[in-house]
Length: 273
Image (cartoon, rainbow, N blue to C red; front, side):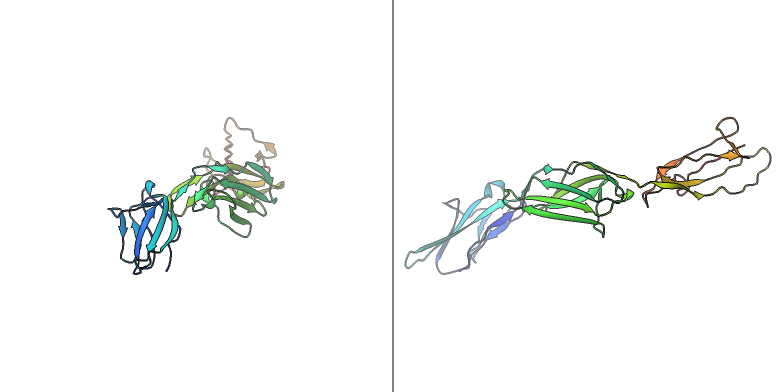
C-alpha cells in the first residue's frame, strides 16, 4: 500500500493525493471530516483524490482512510495541501556603497519568505547580472525560517568603472512565475584609479577658403577627466568673437578612461578663426 504525500499547489493548479487501489473500502477526509465527491473533488478508481481547480479553502490536512471490510480494521495516513505564495517584500536590501577601482564588492539581500522557497537573481540598472570570472552570485535558503526565507550575495572580485550602477535583488516563486518581487536599489560608485592625461585623437590639418569655417577635433583620456585647451600660434584661444570651443564629455565604461561624446566617442573641440 502506498500513502499520500504532502503536496503544494497554486490556486490555478490541480493536485492529487493518491493511494494504491485495494479491495478494502477507501474514503477521504479533510481536516477530520469525510469529504464528499463534488464538481471540484473527484474520487478516481485508482484511489486518488483530485481537486480541480484548487481554491483557498482547499488548504487543509487530507486523510486517506482504508477500512478492511472483513476485519473492520482501519488504517489512515494524512498529507497536507498548501497554497503557494510569495511575500511581497525583502527583509534586507543591498546597501549603497563606494569602492575604489580594483577593490572587491560584496552586496547582500534577504527575501521575506516564499513557499516553495524563492529563487533570487540580481540586476544592475534593470539588466540581469551575468556571472563571470569576476562576478559570482550565491543564494541560500535560511534554515528554521517559516515560510522559507532566501538570502543572496553578489561578489565582484576586482571592480571596474563598468560595475557602477543601481543593484537590486529579484525574488521569484517557481509556481507563481508571473510574480516578481524586487528589492530597493543600491547605488554602487567606483572611484577610478588616477591616470595621467593622454591625447587619444590629434587635430588634423585642414584646408579651407577665406571666409570659411575651420574645425579641429581632439580627444583625451585620463582620471580625473582632463581639461582640453586650444592654442593658436602659442596663444591660448578664448571662446568669443570668431572663436567657438565646444566640449562634450561622456564617460565610457571601459578601462576606467574618459572619451568624448558624439561621433563615435571623441571629445570634439572646434576652433573657428
